[in-house]
Image 1: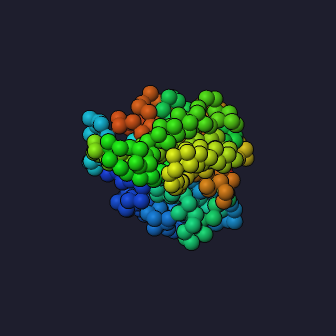
Image 2: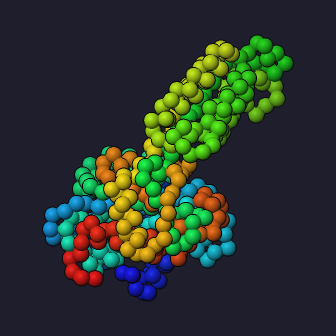
Length: 385
């Protein structure tokens, strides 16, 4: 173990500070500043800030040429009120670290301590603290930022905590790791009229009533195989808050999920066809837009083998992982580098995004050990540990 007892005290304190001050996607200014303050004493060769928004990257260089390995965590919290009696509960009303990103950041901060004491012998280790993961916008913004050229990773690795998997264990498999997803917004516009004479207007209500079960039938869920489709209606709004007006405007929002990007195109086409048919039947105008677009995450066999080796050498029990229904924008980094994500056990805790979820401090060391061993195996050490 490369972390001392004093390190663990500091790291737990860091996670609790991050947990108390959650910031949602695109607003992570204070969080980024806290991370930079923690990183500076570890003396990286460079700290890149303002990356794709509030992103931060710490670069630790080896003396010899070699690959660049990027380890990524997320900065953002969720717009959910935390329900907790914990001493480190959120101090920001309506916002909380209820997905464990505070724990993910702390694990990367622990790597900074280790890389300071034993830098890589070759290549570079990059610790990326990415903004705006929860909206799906952050990875794309980081990659589009000209400063990303300073990183240009050959390998990209990450983790996400998984409730239900025991603390101290991990899960990983080759292939699809996280589903592709996107939100579809269907806007139907007709004509309002008096509620006593609905025949004089064009209401979107019948079309929306038809679309709700029809869209859901396109994606019934089921086994997470190659044909998996899930459509979840998330929001419906029709007309005005009045009893005297038959509505002329309506919106239906739904989230579409497939195991991979290839299946997403077909699901979008089917959903759009249903919307067009419903609009045409009731003489409504139609607008369709997509939001919160997440591409699927694909685990490269070579990188999976690297992480499994690290788990074996660190005596971290691990097993296969099924693709997660939840989405992750880490998949975009797989288009720039060989990449993989593993699942880190967070034990018998609340589910992700529940108002009482809290990342377990005991999981910090396990994630840190796996990442550090993978970095050592790929990049070596400047001097013996």
